[in-house]
Structure formats: structure tokens, C-alpha cells
Image 1: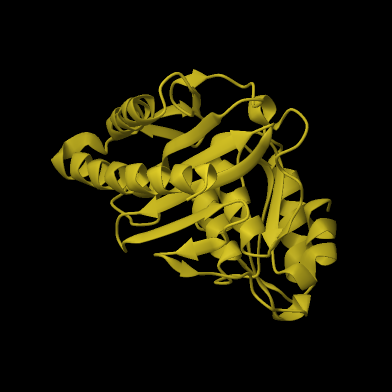
Image 2 (image 1 turned 90 degrees about the vertical axis):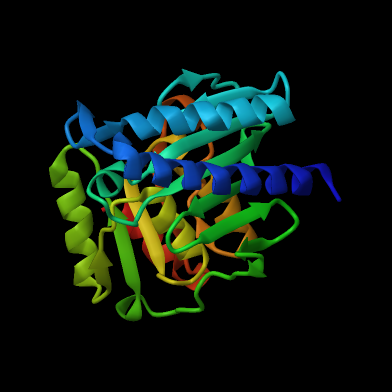
Length: 258
């Protein structure tokens, strides 16, 4: 087994345990949300879950750098860097919904090369390592074969980090093509589902590294179109992100620039 495959498998095991922990903490009352910023929620379970992941990574890969949503960390991606979101979709999580996940990505040389995204219910794990393909619950996945934008289903993520008018322009541009539009509240899951062909594209004008590192590795290994999210100063500043059906790449790229 290659080193990357070993690291992918470790990320899978940790993400599954972390998702189970988060679900248990919510059932015990740890899902009450407070605000870090406008529409930016955090719960007690976020912090506890991130601590669990960090402890497991430190045990399995001692001395390696970690960047997490709740506790920050390194942004130098030259060596092995683990980039994690303990609960992506916290607003859904806090309201008792099931559209949330744990995301653990691995960055080497500034590029996302492996990762795992785990849901608790339904029990699903998206995973990939560069050169080893992408899987959902151990079975290979591929991006959708859709070739006509008017037949596509596209998820558009949003945040208040950018003026809301920019999101409105992109949403209007998507619907003007005839594509269906949805917004599910978890960027990591939306990206993973685009990689798996459940939807035809996921677009967001700005997303942070911890939300998308694992998903970018998964999308590339699933043969999807990606916009080069993991480039420039993405670890510190985030970037626009796009993933989707390979035949729709040019159209999706234009929509991301609307």
C-alpha cells in the first residue's frame, strides 16, 4: 500500500469516528449553536470533535502540521499538512438535520492530494488519494456524464464573506441557463456529491481551505472538472471553488465568474 493510500485510510477511520462522536455529543446537548459571525455558527461539538481529530492525527502522524476551522494552525503546505473541518454544515447540525459532515484533507506541496468526508446518517464516506481513484463507501465514483447545462442540477453555496449581490448574480446566471438550482448548507457535502455525480456541479464564490481540501482531492480522482481551488494563497485566504461534470467545465467556469 502506498503512503498516500495509507494516509487516506487513516483519514477515513478518523472521520468516521469523529462523525459518530459529533452525533453523540449533539444527542447529549452539545449541538446548541452560537454565532462567530453573521450566519457563521459554532457548537460545543465543533470544538470537541476537532480536538478528537487533532489527537488522533498527532498519534498516527506525530509532528505533522494541522490546520482546522476552530483552532487554526499552520498554513504552510510544503510538507504534509492536515486540513480539517470538524463539522461542516453546523447550521444544519444545530437544528437536528443530517446534512453535515466531517472533512479531513491532506495537502502536500501546496496541493490537496487525499481526503475523507464522513456523514453519520446516512452512513457515508467519500474518500480519495491521488492516483488511487475516489470512492463512496468503498465503491468507485465518477462525476456525472451530463453534457448539457440546461439539464444540469447545480448547487450554489453562499456566505456573507462577500456581498450578497454577487451570489444573487451567480444564482440568476445559473437559472438563466435552465439548470436546476439548490443550496444545501454544507459546502464539503455539495462538492463531494458533485464528485459522485449526484449533482452536476457545485459552485461557491468563496470557501475556506478546511471546507474544500478533502473534496478537491476526491473530485479530481472522480474525473470531475475542478477550477483549481487549491492554488495561490488558498490555505490562508480561501478561494472561489467549482466542481462538476467534466463536459460542463467551461459553462461552470463562466457561471463562477458571473
